[in-house]
Length: 297
Image (cartoon, rainbow, N blue to C red; front, side, top):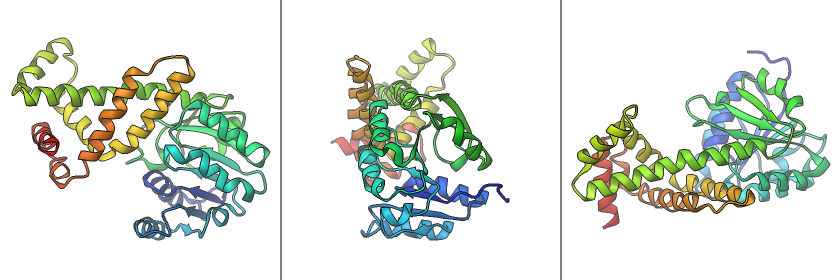
């Protein structure tokens, strides 16, 4: 495919999201993509670099090297590192590039990041609202901020699926953070409820009882799916839920449920690293629950 516009794109952070979006954009016809991740110089960075090479991405030697001459900078780091990522590039930005912040952080953090960048970049608040696989760069996103209207045609030409929600920075983040209270909270409730049912020897009985109240939900399938997601991505989801809790505090609410979700997501992320739990993630919920109980013993 030949794009009318061929922006030079730099990724700051090259984990799962960065890799997926970069590989999709390369296949879409974006020729110049650079990436930098603070893990590149470390042993664990070898896998990230190998993925970049396969995708045809230029591996930068620093954040400054990555953003040099870029038209678009995409920040895709861990939630806790989003402000630090902006700090690492702001002295090296030139040409007033777009700065696309896809990190799962609170509206307040996005507003602070935009203020840090100032007039060195055109900041765009972006919220990824579905799993990054299998759609990669075509995963639906919400965008907000004063530059959302201007960048939308360019992102659309690169086949990105977007919806402008506001010209106010932080509004896209707010939607994602607030909806995460429900989505990741349901995962945590599933974990707590069915782990208790398994420990009590009443897994099927509890499932049948729930079916009476929620006939439209297949609890066997839902439980298996939610447990797998938590085991595979619990640590990242816990960090995101900490930002959801921060969002609720910014809104004057006490995030009791969100904080409980943080604890369950983090525990499942820890348990999901064990071979015993990982080996059950493609099996039935009873197998996963039994492995979890074994890991807690």
